[in-house]
Length: 467
Image 1: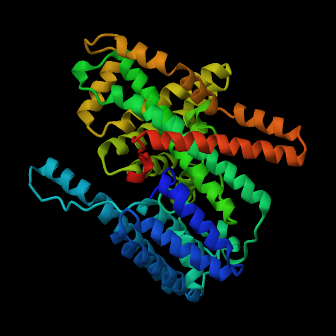
Image 2: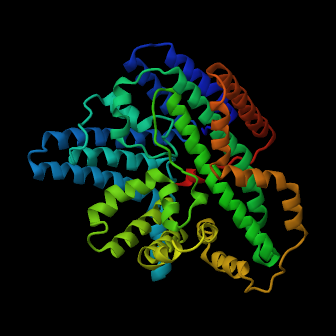
Image 3: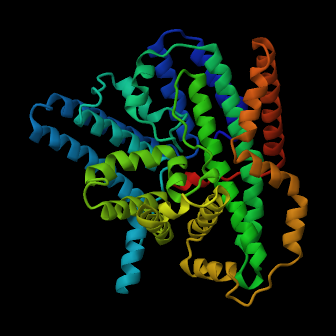
């Protein structure tokens, strides 16, 4: 099940809210959230519930073991090794087994049969969350959770189970054990959810349809302008797709008393790649920083090696394909260049040059992300820079632009903070009751447009489900 679906909006979410708020006891509410979360996860692939339960149970007992033996470092280390081995082993098996076999076959000429293992939805997200818990206990940053129901809720809560943000146990433990209802938070959660839904359904889905019209063409039928337009549309799609889903998760959290940290901060307004990766998928970047980059030595020891490792892992985390590895290393090289040379130059240039520099590199990076076929990726770059003898443009480009020009302007505006700031300024000039009334009307509008589009269109993918 996904948030941007009629089943979720009109059946699952209302039922969950009604049952949840029918019981004042926190432990009962936790249990209700667990049951609804398991149903939510089982909606598409019920078989993977077993894997989810096994992973959570293992880390629950690993946390208890580590805490019990903190004064005996060798035994505590056994616990953290066991946790990491099982978590990363499951992730490697289910996500990368086919990729490893295919790579070995291509390098050696052998013909090993690929396992054909399906990827459990959300495994990349909940694996990192449970790792953050056991590592946190090992580092004495958090205490082990002795109530299995409370720990299980941290792992399976449907708000962030299948697509993040990556939630750390330390950020939510107090709310798991003692959250209180706040009406203002609930209203804000509804607004954040509706805004995320609108971003996903109206902007991301529209961009995705246009992108596929141009990027899925055979190279012989493509044009230079068409390839650029398709790539720009994919750039819009992936941001509004993932940030919209993150907004919906954050909004749902507030409806139930949880406060998740923002996962995006207008990344397309960045002035460098360093700036971009402080704004894009913040929960993933901070995870690799705290659990890989700094333990390797950070900036103090072998910084270049550490950056290459982190970005290689960042790439492969996104998908079991060589294009994702290349995508990660592409950013690693740019970040290293900025660290040692480019940042000093960029800081002396006007802002529009900094923004242009960042946007061009971001868009070119998404080309690597889109094409899993490396041959088609090379052809795409040749086409973008007019190395191939393809036409510059044709009627399909002008037709797509003219038909979507107002939508395109709106998408560009919403990728900046200005509409949000203007709305906040406008609401601040109203009294409390009038501002709440305006927010209510905004919610009705955003939800209404999204529902109409969900009813009228069948194209409703979610890019990050494959991660």
